[in-house]
Image 1 (cartoon, rainbow, N blue to C red):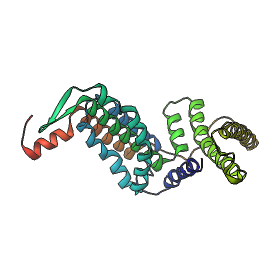
Image 2 (cartoon, rainbow, N blue to C red):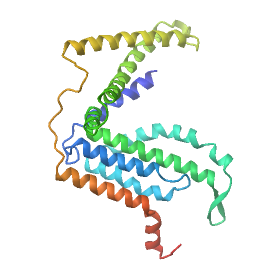
Image 3 (cartoon, rainbow, N blue to C red):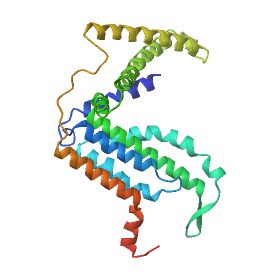
Image 4 (tube, one colour):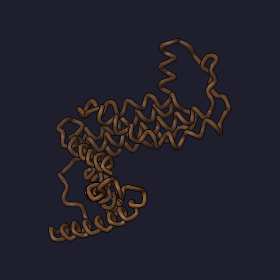
Amino acid sequence: MASVHGALLDLKRLDQLAAGDTAVHRLDPRAKVLATLVFIVCVVSFGRYQVSALIPFFIFPACLIAAGRLPAGYLAAKVALVAPFAVAVGICNPFFDRSVLVHLGPLGITGGWLSFASIVVRTALTVAAALTLTALTGFASICRALVRLGMPKAFAMQLLFLYRYLFVLAEEGGRASRARELRSFGRKGLGLASYGSLLGHLLLRTWQRAERMHMAMLARGYTGTFPAAQGGRFGAREFAFVLFWSALCIILRLYNGAELLGTLVTGYLP
């Protein structure tokens, strides 16, 4: 529980990074959201056996991280946290799909390994793009941008409350875990049987905490909508940003950039 608590609190650094003052930070959030949506749609639309065509798409998060002066190591560590889930999803593919599709010299690569690699790479790309967007914009600004792009306000508010509630849950969970350890003298009461009551108390405590937070919001004039956001204008810079990255992603989706680069370097036409 303590490790989960620390990992969730560490996500607050994304909101701190969003307070930067670079050219990418100053762009209207709608431009960054639209470019990221086009990127994610292009990435997930690839076939299950396509791997090399996905590699050039790393240019999108890499360029945004460099332009926004974001800590690449921190974001890479967050992407690595999601990697085990992608591995768990595709780990059985090599056992069921054993048809050889690619030959690397004497080594034959089956379709199962290709689809497994494709799942891992696409997961890394989409998670990296989402984390970079949050670090450049902030989750609240992303929700406001989604509302201005046509998302129902109720759904956007639920997303924002879910994001905020994760930290409340982590804080209450950390307190409950520390109290449980302090009351377990001689390591008694630390077995699996104690987790049932711990989860029940955690649910009640977070529910009461959420009710107090809601009453505090109502006392401060909350009406069910976002507070007035900072004035943003979708100008020429935002239009050029969306146009450039959308065009690049669509071109990379239609043409295998890694294959074209290999052809230029080796002079070999497949």
